Image (tube, rainbow, N blue to C red; front, side):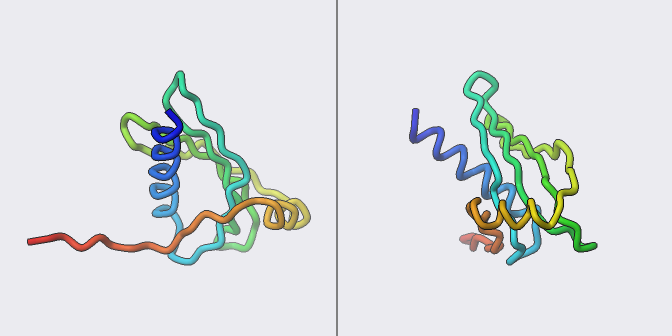
Length: 101
């Protein structure tokens, strides 16, 4: 069970990483696994292109491997600074897998 949960979280993070530009600074504020619904709820911190910090909410559906955007909320620079000090980063470097021909 723990292995399946970790694998689904890794898949969730891989899908989320593809949303942001390579090298973007994104922090994982919270994550919640729902075993009954078979999905992850993830809240991220990101500075949008206009420079405003936002809390972004996503839901990753495990059976379909689809990420759903659930909304965003602007937050203050002070709150963003606290999250950046305490939360882990989401790796956002994009890599393309080579295909065998």
